[in-house]
Length: 483
Ligand code: SF4
Ligand code: SF4
Image (cartoon, rainbow, N blue to C red):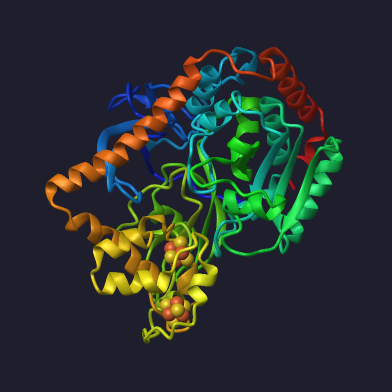
């Protein structure tokens, strides 16, 4: 059973979101009372994801605050004193998709609702959707295959809110003109499959939306791996799934999109898995964004003395946090509190026996054992040649290594070593090249929006289809909505 985390006394809401924060600025000031769902920022373009007050209260300050992020330690945040009223902002209204007659308007509306990929990557949903107005999409893949061991928030969502996921999937099909869709679930999630199929029957959902199962193999939940496992189609390197006709969205994102269209509610809450042998009562909780991790841990009975680390995300790709004062954000699918034993830190590393197991499991087709030797030998040129920067730090090689070599840890260190080894001029060149690539990508997206209305479906037709889905779901018996 899914329970909400208690409303804390204070929330910390990062005000910077999306791929570009250019022209986005705070819409509130210290001392101002805000209501649930009220935007805390204004401005920005289709690439800027807005933040909203996740309950009612008074803005105590706008300040730089620690956040859980792979590359940045702090961000500008609104610190909100919660008043416990949870009063809803009267400006919240269901949007009118007939207004989304250009890719830019579609992306802007969805970004301003704060919608982003809830699988952990938090790519702006509006940007993905807008891209489909320029590229034909034949299939919507709604991803309920958890990307990492330990994380069960998607499983919980599928068991408790199957209708919102399916309605969101139909909305995605209507918005993109896709002819078919599937909700993908791992084979061992029998309850989720049953709940989705039951709701599919209640919805009278068309034949073209189905529930399909895939084996539970990490990292099969990554969208590239998922498309390959489902269809045999490989997404080419440097291309996106939309380039070959697939649009992938996480189940949480599909449900959030439906709720936004149904009620106007922006993204202000998510399910977070709190787990590991270092927490008293592991569970899934529905958490308001901005709740400090310390408050979530307290709601789960607190730390056990054996806890050795605090990780945001899963055991494979999560990031270690220095403090539990950081807030739950859109990306916080899991808070992991493992013991030393769980992390394998009590096992001594042994020499590599060249078994090749790490090569066999690497999804990036690298040679982890060779990379590791190059890191240890500080052979920085070799590291680049061996594809160090193609390593996605998934941790698969660590898991299979019979010598307990902490390969991923060494690759993270190796990446830092390569960057630090550069002289200032080379570093500026290297970061400049990466920044240039990013800017080119952003400019390409912006050019697509500027190019005028999209191809199909015609905006009016797509708005009618979305309205029909929302109305159909509203007419269903209330008791069937959440089990
Ligand atoms: S951590 Fe890197 S090297 Fe190891 S399996 Fe994953 S992608 Fe390959
Ligand atoms: S799995 Fe471990 S022991 Fe085997 S080749 Fe890779 S690094 Fe060496």
